[in-house]
Image (cartoon, rainbow, N blue to C red; front, side, top):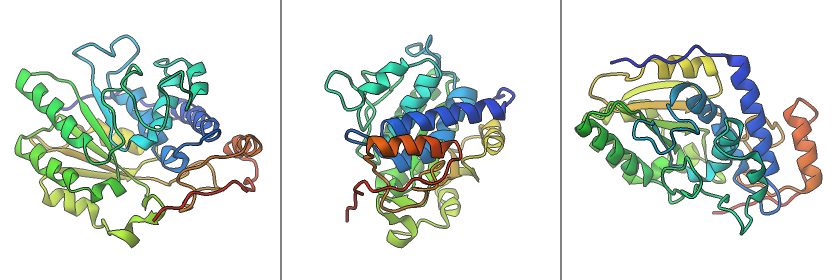
Length: 289
């Protein structure tokens, strides 16, 4: 059965996404966070919570709620920023990022209402999402289950095992969303372990696939409005995104995946989000090999 999605208000969603990006920038100091990856996932997460998933502040523990698992857990600033904008989390708590007095840090924590499962060790949450989706199939629940993965995360073999299992059990109530920002840490995915042709690979494993612009709310509406894509098949959305989206000074920069900016840089970056000139960044970058 096809699921109807509400009419889209692109202007409203764009405004929410901009506010979420501001939250991410503000969390990118005093210890920092995974800024680049979080910015690439903002529009996906904002759309899902605003227009697709039955999740709100009043049903977080209700058995009829939908489920979202953030497998690429380092994107949690985008998730918490969305929670704050939609009333699931007090905005003032975002100031506690990396504080010992709260649970808001580099990865999701189930002490925060709305977080279904801890994540951070990549490749594991697809299997958790399968367990929930299978339980719902057995019990006859109509809940939707979404799992957001990073493209670099797909180098974990457990992800592909999960695709095989999901299709073996005909879990068409499950959607894997790939944030395809083309980077794994400091390296482009195609320079490390090439993933393309990615859609063909998912189809070869039995999934029904749609590939879209992950920053275009109309594209997102068209894709998720067609859920389930094919009866009895895992749904996969490959969302092409830009790491660091919204901040030209860090977009697609391999050395700006994790950022710990100075207070002065934060002020300039907030202006840059609103179309001011690019920020001259002098803070130290993080490079791993």
